[in-house]
Image: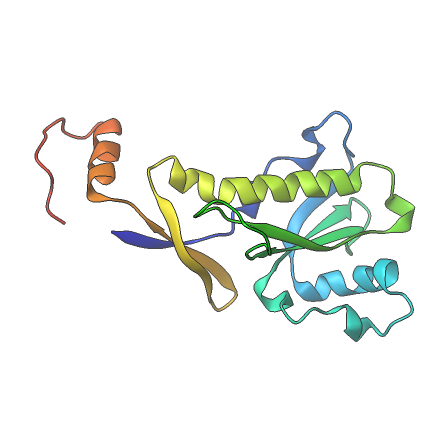
Length: 178
């Protein structure tokens, strides 16, 4: 059996200010690629046209921004992409590539970039964790329905029955028909 589920769990992410060394006056949220471009341009490529800061794969990435309590524009941004690494890795393992990580120079050295990385690490780990705890495993490539990213998850009938029993279902050994 398989199910497709939205892969975005950013709304369930922990408070970025919870770390004792982190900033206390910021919020981190998922943003559009367009919201990343001005800061990418200012920090990474100020001598190029802003159009040069857009990546060909930006539409399939996930983008996050840090906002100060007094700003409506991000003060730090990062883009992440689910893609294979150009090195050998264990069968079935997933990789996330971080690209275009930028923090406004006025906000560097305050732990804002660290808080942003901590947030996207949590999102990447949590994305599969809830399903994995229930015996499900990702398979196939991610896909989109409009702007929403999905990942297919599967579970064997035996694992589904075990999960059903663990959740308080009948202890019968008879396998239900699907």
